[in-house]
Image (cartoon, rainbow, N blue to C red):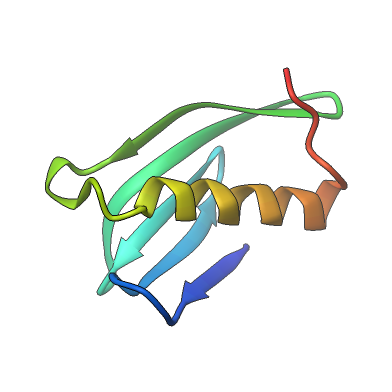
Length: 81
């Protein structure tokens, strides 16, 4: 499981990996997710959602950045579809 914590910039968050998705948490509560699908050596992220009341704070960018970093660490550089 990949975990990533952000200590600077509002809001403080944690990203966790679950089967087929990454979730972003604030104070232990899920506020968004991105789904992924693996096909051969390709991982795609077709869907990302951030709770409406949490939008505009850079959480989607932080979530995708953590997901891509975890993918690179586990499988090498991600390929663009």
